[in-house]
Amino acid sequence: MKDASLKECGAVRYRKVTYEPKELGRYIVADPRICHGKPTFRGTRILVKTVLAQVARGEDWQTIIGDWDGKVNEEAISEVVRIASEALTTFESVPAPEPELVAH
Image 1 (tube, rainbow, N blue to C red):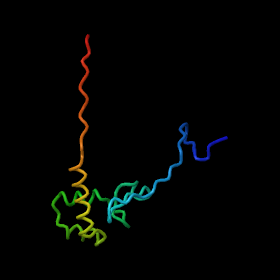
Image 2 (tube, helix red, strand yellow):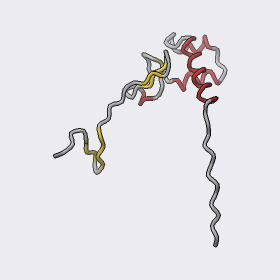
Image 3 (cartoon, rainbow, N blue to C red):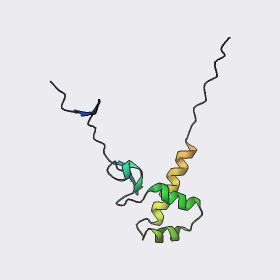
Image 4 (tube, rainbow, N blue to C red):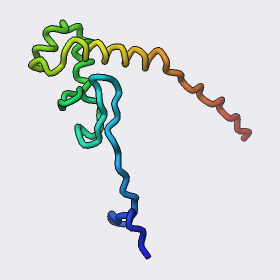
């Protein structure tokens, strides 16, 4: 009996998995049905990384808001900057393993 949750794709079988939208903040969501799950501003297809790049270039926030016809507001930009900052300040790198010495 075949498992109904398995699907064949060429020679590869995989389980059908349902992914739910993930709320990353009040204004930010990652929905696998929108922009391949990349973080966007709620109710839009505006990528968070695009707005962060505008902020990084030093663009005035009012200009950014105008570029997106008001679909991204000042509070949303502030939230994105805060979340990005928190992600970087809480990031912990994993030390590289010591190289193995091999005798010849």
